[in-house]
Amino acid sequence: MVYKLDGSGNETVLYSFCSQSNCSDGEEPTAGVIRDPVGNLYGTTYKGGDASCVSTAGSSCGVVYKLYSSGEETVLRTFTG
Image (cartoon, rainbow, N blue to C red; front, side, top):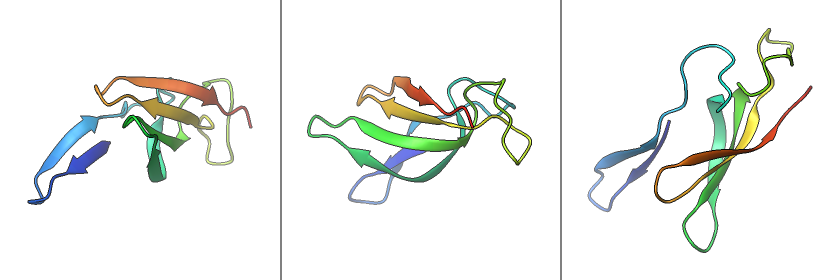
């Protein structure tokens, strides 16, 4: 999931990724996110994306995603191996 913390430490979930195997929106986000000047976030997932791609972990190969400040997620790139 991607979440934010306010100045008081209160957590808000911005987006929850699918928890099932081979989800097209990605699963298991890795590393941090980067933010563009208008507040959109960009990141990667370890799994999910193209179900026909099988990684060494036995699952799909991950995605690069964009998370709009509204909480809507868009897959920008699906890894193929």
